[in-house]
Image 1 (cartoon, helix red, strand yellow):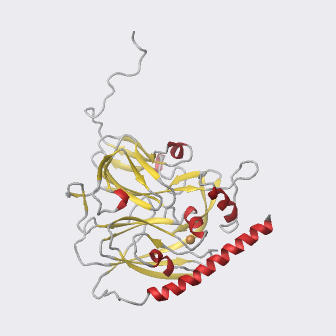
Image 2: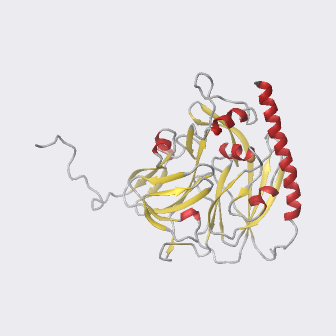
Length: 371
Ligand SMILES: [Cu+2]
């Protein structure tokens, strides 16, 4: 069994090296041709922050396109997704999900990606927002100890997933090990509602939902591994069944509940960006709504209004806006309720402010039925 496992692991490593070589060839082809003219464009550094927060940004920007420089360090590390349950995770910049990037339509994203030599595996980045070369995946494959810089033009306003895609089985393995994040490309003149009028938000949160496929031992106990290479074969076996053992919102149970709940006040408009890089999800805010939901995440689509639940397909990030009208603790969850209540796919929003009895009132308290 151990020999079989070793052969299979070696094969996967070989496969990765072959696709790495292909990536090198493609990078040569993709780097010649029509050249960009970046003369006179301002360079701006974006400091990425840990989700659910977004980096500092303007909601509208009417100036010339800019080159937005950012950097992420890939970190392979063990994380505890719920007490006593550990995974060998792969992360962009140490967080699950990776950080949200925010730029404006027409800007250039210039990302430096570092794969420290303390890591074991090859990684890269595929931006769904980018055009060509596997979303940049073919130009960004880096072995431990290497770094690479990719620039792409953010020409499609919307919210988009990025993820690692180093080739073959490593693609799903790295994604379900947590290697994804999202980027928001804002229209220059900001967000518009279904009637074409400007809308702005008071707060914004990024939620990255994902399923984990954690192997169990013969006693049903979740297994723990020394690194992501040793855990691979067992994890791929569980993945083959397509049913996750756990679903997290931002990397671990409770990451966005209780004291870590997202915060808002009555009267505030909140932008929720929800990504799912692998499975489908259906988002519901209990006691609230999606006032505006951009189908598929593109800001060029007319937003749908007053949604009770909205769909997030595997491989996309979807934005929704809601103005809170009542205080309380709201659950924000996957309305596949099995995933939410049994596997963990849920978050909370703590909303402070004054209750509006006109919207809802308990007319009489529960009491015995009168005959
Ligand atoms: Cu990776």
